[in-house]
Image 1 (cartoon, rainbow, N blue to C red):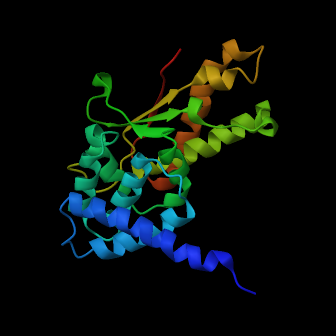
Image 2 (tube, rainbow, N blue to C red):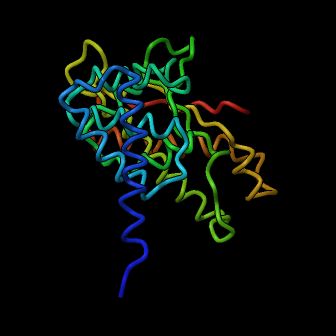
Length: 228
């Protein structure tokens, strides 16, 4: 039996490979030793995930260069993308860290987890966890499941603090997790939504404290609710 997809798959991969290669050349990275391998691996991934936003492709390309040990090329990719240009340094620190990237990929690609700078916290690592961008099924809209989901999201987000801050020798856990989109979550657990804010701060702080202890950090990221 002839597989009709067998002849189409290579052409799709070639199309993506050409697109990625064009981007690599536009960034003047085609002579980097890592460029060929990065282009091919991205083409294979994009073939399986064809509906990929440009900002997601940039992150994946930067991550691939980081894994290959080419932080210069990764930085060029991030600075080229308007979605990441402002926080390129923060992205570069995180994308260079060894952790299970698939855990954070859905949060990064949906922009549910992204870097932020707040004057009140200085240059400490600050990341936004945007609950408004989290898609919950009807089955998940139950209070007990929501809290469990929140714990899993926070534990996954804590991976961004595994990067080593400038002038430090190891991760220290200093920074802030800014939680946005609380009304989106609270709407599923009314009528007690008015009391959820202090409960959430305490709960998330406890989750992060356990993460800090497990990772041996000297500090614990603080929690800030953005839309109270």
